[in-house]
Length: 458
Image (cartoon, rainbow, N blue to C red):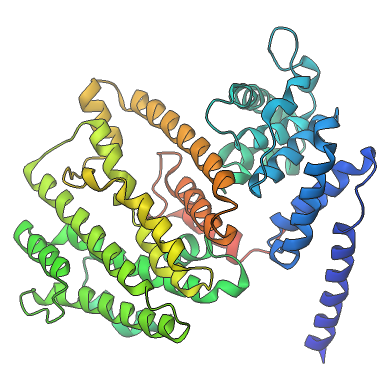
């Protein structure tokens, strides 16, 4: 009875929110109120209940030019961010009204922490060539850092969280039965982290449960294989493993026993995917997935070879290879197979993106981007960090641009997965100081508790 009553109450509240979202275009003084409602619904993780209403409301704002016409920095910045986050293009020229004759943001913005924070968040939706948003980021970051110590505690915490990771960038029984912990003691058991970062991050909507399960399995299986390459196998054994996967030799006869376990687990995993996709007429998925697995193992093997030879590549060589050496593409091939939107055209689109890097695959390595840059240019670690951070910021601009450009051709659900994976990478590796996946410490624990345990503060 109690559960039924709760469901009834939830239904009433959903209709109330839906009604609030579908009201006609608001008067100028109410624009920020409606934008804030949309933002709150999305941040609370319930936006999937109202996706059509949110899209309609944002499109309404775009078509009526209410964001363009506003003189309020909070309204313009929040509207700009929400529109771009949902794939709607709005020009960065809307911010010129807040710039003085010298090209600097006006001084009267400095003490408005709300407006500064919204402008700061909006600046992360830039695309290449938008200098005004680069200036906005520099301006807002500088002044928010100065203001934060004078703000009341809850507000200061909000600002500090945004300065650390802006909102635009912020991601079982099967495993027990495999018993890898006893059979392969060299590997990292990261099942919780796999689910938290690689599954829940990109596939947060409730109806994507199968995607979450698939992504978590894929992440843990390839964590084991990654550890096998990094910390256990000899170069001869790793070359043999790579050749076995390349030939897709399912007999496994040539492999050492410790290598048979993970490869057999991968084969069983792919068989499970094939059985599920065949039932929905999408058996074409499995060939793409096999090729993605082969590609990933091929790169692992090349990197092991270079590591054995002590080779440190040029920075641009390293950067080119890392475009495909990340497991993100492979995880995506596997997990989106559970989505009805994963048509053959979508798989071809993903494949086109990957094969653009194929010519770089024969230049493997293990040294990090930082180490490569330090050696090639003779700079300190801190200087290398600064350069690579600039590359990351530029890449985010391209991500933002492509998200809006492809929004009409590729289902938004698919595009959001790639955007979410980029956010996961930002959370895990963005500050250089702590790899939150490889090293499970208090920071990882705090993130886990915040997302899965602690209630949302009201």
